[in-house]
Image (cartoon, one colour):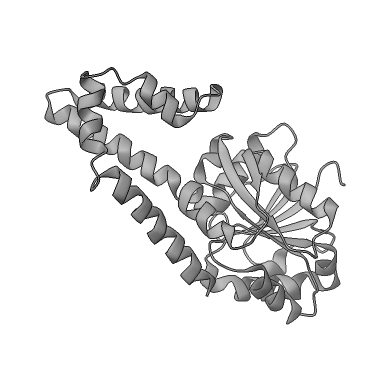
Length: 273
């Protein structure tokens, strides 16, 4: 395995940008060529190009990371294939797009005469600060070396959870890919509730964010289950019990959270076609 892999990052928006920022902050960033019309950055290990035709002629990517909108995947693959030519056969594709299957991406590459292994991952936006978590699936054609490189690229920006079935990525997308938005919504609602009860916006924000941060640290650092941690902080007939009596009604969180995950999973399946 290359000690420092060469990566072509196609798309440097929200998710691609999170990976990009995380890689640059890591101790050993990969050699990067970024294909994006809007990103500007340069350095010893980074080159930014606006079109695939501008990819350096001597650049051989080990991994092509697709972080573009799913609807334009074929267009991007076609442009990269024409620019790289035979070099594309020596690379693997790592998709961080929701929905697009390994087969559809491999078929798109094959139209350009390239037979490339495809791996799929679903990172989340905390990858930008090295606190991400990614589900990773590798198709049967991916080599052990390519799996390791992709794992290491994702591990540089957070934890990595391999999944055995590609279909599992729809649930991964719903839970961890979209999950930060659910946590941000909780913070938003806690802030608003604090203000409605007379706290200043600054105090309400600090309390909401500090609570979520501390609870997350406990979940990460302690071996106890989430249920046990919840029970430990809930004194009988206390303030926490009063709040949970509302949140845990049958028509509240126990019903709406699974419905939300079902909706996100269904949408991920729809995107996969």
